[in-house]
Image 1 (cartoon, rainbow, N blue to C red):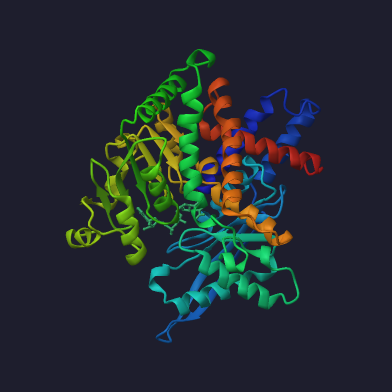
Image 2: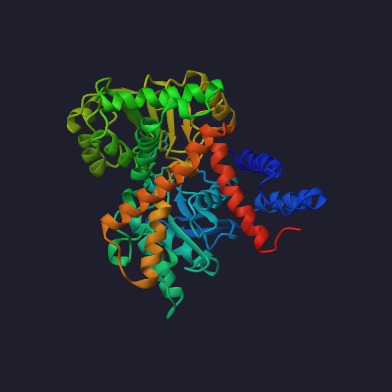
Length: 469
Ligand code: NAD
């Protein structure tokens, strides 16, 4: 979904909110219109876009000039917060859209943060550790005045990890001697004040959100109690009930995961080892290949291979080294394979107008940010498929980042159990706000319900702060 599509969605939902008479009853008539117009204006305008260039001498002494971004969308709910991605081709529009999604995600889950995002236009695989260390430190040098524990708090995203966060916090500390620095970055190593379980948090949260919807909500819901006249809502409910029955009866549910990095690798592991279901992880993919086995792939062996080679085995030789039985297919074949559940955990714009009609999965979970375009999203919804949107499903990382930031301020460290309990608890609470309302009030779609809840919160904060006129 592009920045324009996200902004259009925000505007449409603000119009929907304007018509909700019980929302903001104190504003009526012309004044109500003005207040809503100004809310729309604020939430579709980005606070600050910073672009810089990082110059780094490569190991062969060639100097490369790399575009780098930090974009802060809105901080009405708290300090700016959002990951930094190292990814080839990353651009201003992409980073700005991701910053807006962070504002919405944090508001939806009740976090005291605004939204921001960072990007560096490199393929980290083409850089040596020394070069990556330099890119990370120079990024902090460029953006130092705009980041900090009470200003803007970056975290890992695609292509970055705890090693990068450790380098970045080290540089931040050097630049700001004597200042409180630990909470300036999250997703750090444990030694550097990181939280137990942060690395796995997003993937675990993605899987939890899907399982909660099927087992905890649809499984326990009596159809008669729901107001299910509309065809799409009924179709979706039937999908959830069917998958729940399969879980309950230990019948295999065919699940696939696109992207085998931090988020996708963990989500695949969770599905493979889940005690509450009998998933066959029939396909996984990365930037090179899709691996398919209709009886289920051996995820433990694939993870072991990936730990060593940082990619999936893509040839017959590599598969035999990994001791995995699978058919290697084209990277993008995963999008349209026969399956019940599809976790998208790679990059943006994977399901589009071009392939949406070929999608077979009945439940699609957005582990990645914006992997489904607007048109495809509407089409899949109308077809009765259940799309669990990014801002709902992939918030595990930022929820645990919040705990890390808190523990760095009070220097009382959470145990891994405490971290996971808090994360699952908050994700379940948010799901419990979204799904019953979506089905009972027959709201337009699940993404719309999430946006509506987030925007209500942001709009009220802007109003109470006296920022709308
Ligand atoms: P990562 O760099 O660890 O992994 C990305 C994976 O996607 C790799 O396996 C890569 O090979 C694969 N990939 C890249 N292009 C692909 C393609 N065209 N087809 C199939 N696979 C492809 O990144 P990550 O941290 O796992 O992030 C994945 C997504 O999740 C991103 O959209 C990111 O913004 C989102 N996300 C991450 C976090 C987090 O905590 N890491 C939090 C929220 C959202």
